[in-house]
Image (cartoon, rainbow, N blue to C red):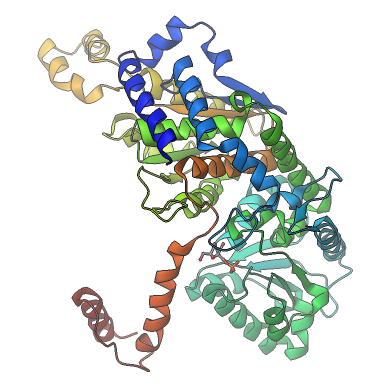
Length: 543
Ligand code: F6P
């Protein structure tokens, strides 16, 4: 964090000390306009952040923090295509993939929109042909599509295809990511090679997991249908056309993208092909449009009315002023069950950094641990800790006002639970309340005193709620883009590069050294006692 920003954080810390003498309930009582003041609406999406332990002055100081940290200037640089990912020498321009303004997007003096639209049109043509059975296996349409990828080349397509399940009316989609052969094996065991299309999704086309799975899938196909089937049954999504050709994928079935699309931001690119095949090009376009709308909002709304800016600042308040270590994502929507995992990569790979832009060590906490599960499942697993644990964990609740299918009163129960949880986290239950409830139930005074402390809820636990009419492709696009920009702003305030991911390299490098050892082709050499001990034990156990 630059020093001017640290100075505002110091002011925020003193402000917090004074503010947190009052409970959130007291703050609600003192300000009848609190819900209106601390909520924003955009295209049917309500963002209620009034259940965070803040007041007007908090927001005022946080907005000052955003200004001195240079949020507006960096936002301009982002959309101007500057090389803000400077450790990789690249622009960050996934927004071009969803640009529906008709305006050019310049990167390094070149309008990239021609290339973007060209790939999108090819994807649309290909998806339509697959969905209609016009592109097929030898003589049968493809019934199953297997996306082979990992990280951003898997999590985006999986999350979106699950979230938009009610819109999936194409071939059945499958996703294989793990190097553990069980993943591919279990997926293939139910599939017919003659009617299966493989999509190898990898920006680099060198990722060990993806290429291992792709080669095994290729062998499975060739064994059943012969070598000639590869050109028909494989498509590739990548920036590395030399490698896709070497693998045997034809250029006709290869869909490219560019180095200015980060892996975790690539769902908008050719990486979304499996989703487009599943939900159809029109619905995919609506997904892009939702994200595009957010890009417009992010660029034009004043900071205090700018949803991703406010989301980011609330997160900074929690992480740097209140020192809360994690952030939980709680979608009250089964279809969003992979949304927390998706955001985990988006956030933690972007902002899990300990080095400032100038190469000095970070002087403040950066990205929190992001985790979560859908409600109501989490209520019966980890909410105990959310309500009574010693850490305070800010929560994001996501809820659709109406569901796609309406069996009985499931949805009303889902809604009631969602609202109840954010209310319970905030209001808590005092010792006095608990004691009088126990006495009213007929417990003796002694028993009530003994039991009461265990049933106390401290309350004052912060949360924000995103409430929207329905989980449509457009709304999903909006939600994803809001979090993308939130993460970008936080990175600016922390003064880190949110767009590289050097932290994944060391493990890959060491795994590369260990593989010939594990295969028995090389000796282990000098290692720490734990690694040597584990390896010796592994050898003793055998395969
Ligand atoms: O190892 C991390 C990472 O590079 C992610 O950033 C990326 O989403 C994933 O691996 C997959 O990379 P690729 O698409 O090149 O296979």
